[in-house]
Each structure stands twice: as structure tokens, then as C-alpha cells.
Amino acid sequence: HGCDAACNDASVPLVRAFHDPVLNRWERLPEGQEPPTPAELYTHYRRRRPELFDELDPKILPRAGLTVLNMPRTQVTKATFRPALLSAAE
Image (cartoon, rainbow, N blue to C red; front, side, top):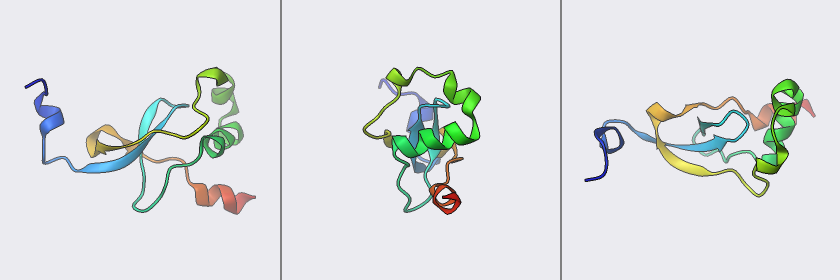
């Protein structure tokens, strides 16, 4: 009924994930962790991958907050952003 088997598969667990607008992918959030703020994420990329960040148009990047959804685990990647490492480095 308008939904293919992939989106209706109860055997694939749902996980909380946020959309990374820099890499244009969904990243899984560890249990109990909130997504980074857009400013934290952009600072992370400016430090770690400045060449990637410089190619982006800042006008299309979210400023208020990143989108968080429950996504099938098979459609998300392991989060590469670690807020604890960011604050420990400062």
C-alpha cells in the first residue's frame, strides 16, 4: 500500500540518527546522546576537513538545528562526530 518491503521490514531495528548536511548522510546517535548543534558540527569540519567544508555553500546549511529521526539501522552510518572529543580538545 504505497510502501515497499524495505521500509516495512520489522526485522531491521530503528535507531535515532541525525542528518549530517556536510556529508549529506544520516549518522546514528549513540544511546542517550543528542546530536551536535550545527555550530559544533561545522567547527568540527573546519578543523578536521577544511577542504570539504570550504566547498559548501553556507546558505544551504541549517543553522537552528539538525534533523533527528528514527531510521532503519541499515540506512545510517556510525557517527563520526564525537562532542566529547571536541570539548576535551578545547
